[in-house]
Length: 364
Image 1 (cartoon, rainbow, N blue to C red):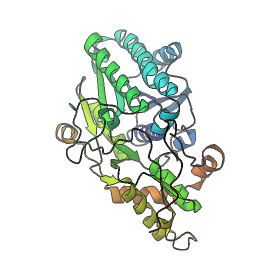
Image 2 (image 1 turned 135 degrees about the horizontal axis):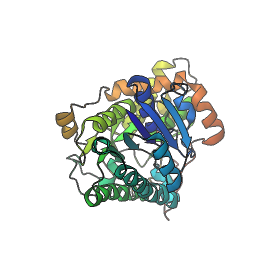
Image 3 (image 1 turned 90 degrees about the vertical axis):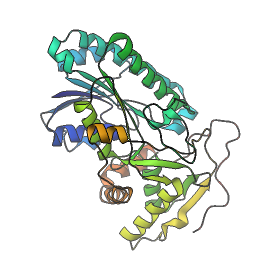
């Protein structure tokens, strides 16, 4: 099996590449532009494997993508390349529209041309799997979960760009017959996660003895999915699902942001008993909420569980312990990022009326 993975040097993409090459034994071509959040070091475990190869390319470059498809001749495309950080999309929407919308369009066109030229049997087996997010569905109330038929109600530039990409994929399936698959996932966490996102940011802020920012009063709820469980879910869909289907993947682990950060602090207290910053909960600081902050996400995974037999292996507790332990044991990966590339500065202040940090930090 040969799979072209876009965005394979990113957080989820690198987990996919490690799984596909290291455990499943597939031949993988990783195509990545290497933007700020991508890191080839995340692929150290498979970098020397002859089944793994890397090409630096932009998915908006149709000629480059077409040539790579022709040369590599994949059996499937797993499309993960995207700008993903909501706060950055608030400050600068243009890169999200460029990569997530235009890039998906260019990739679809290249894939369609490639697929039409395949021999009949290979064309029948070919799949284009687009990976999306629960954020395209907007915000939930206190009850219920998103299903595969939930209406689209994106509330941020990021989620709107992913919703547009989803619709393009559906259109290329219905109009041109391209054998596509779609999946929408809940919040991922785990090793090799760029520290602009909540969990790695909280871990590194705690280790540094710095205030840990929590938006609003920390009451927003997310469903958390361990990244390696997500990678296995993507593999299951890609290799077992019928063309044209869509699946929700989630961890069944709803937590408020405050619960997440508190759990991280307590784990670090336990794992670093000699830390000068204990108890780390003292570092939690409430800051002004970001614009358009969705209240709650939760995913109904009944279709993936019942139809494909996929369920997450990790509970939130086991996955978070693995994640915190990984950051404690792998400073070689994050210290360079933390010291030179991103130091946890606040993003997403663009809308008028968003103020700075609360002057009354929480002191548990």
